[in-house]
Image 1: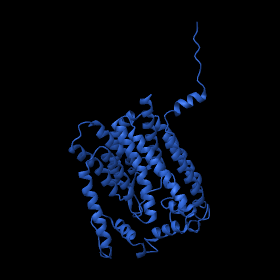
Image 2: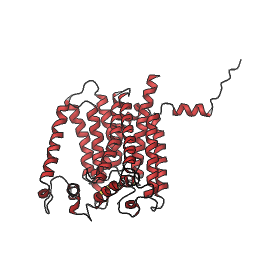
Image 3: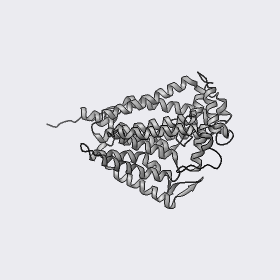
Image 4: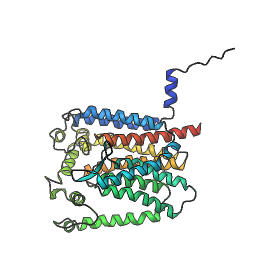
Length: 384
């Protein structure tokens, strides 16, 4: 008697591959991607192939997400130390013989020109999640100090380039892991309170601190100027304050319902600088108004909440820390970009996830989504 094995249908095989993908997370990303394509078509209509390139970058990010989602979190943990070591080694190479563009040394030629700091956006949370997983159940204060040192090394190297935006993202990703690992509030509150006091003093003494010839320690001149411009954009309205002023004008002119698709005058008359990249939120606000902004923010909030839910339900400490940190990367991207365009944060080079144009950032976002999908899939497999 010969056994007949029925060959599974194409739909059956596809469903096996897609099983475990988190539907709510995918839906939130789909909404954000649609919003990004819509505003990119309007703001980038005279930027050649920028709209089509943005769509291509999204497809590449989607493919990366799909591939990474097939890798179990246990396999991802094996990449933590090698990827972190490679990233730090490349950052040291940048410091020694990197390529300088526009006054910043951020690139290195290894056959192709790459920006190593982008690697650390994912390598940093991987490394710290691995570190705390190895010490699960026996954490001591020394372990948190070591984690802080592992975080401080790449952040310091990135700030030295200088690249304030990327260093903030890497710092936020690392601090999220340390916080979720159980860092005591007694250690968190003092630096937070100190920072608040420092900001209050900065506002009070701003005229003297931002006077001509005054130099601040630690910060580069251009970083100091960004902070001073944030406090008073009108001190140089046609120069350093131009970005913030035009961004706020565009946001305010959108009103409640916006001027309509393709009707943004600040956008199409090119008053908004970098309208397809860092300041695309201003273009979106002008055309879709307060209602559009609330819908966009709601989509980001849903994305973050879904990511944190995946983190809470993750089967291992490594997966929980990694999912929580990756989710906070999305939050930091969105919060910093919207904040700088709205004039409540200094202008730094941070794109708006899935909305701003940029291939490197889109690849990083695809990696992050793939990690979240992988962790969500592992949770479902454990349950079944």
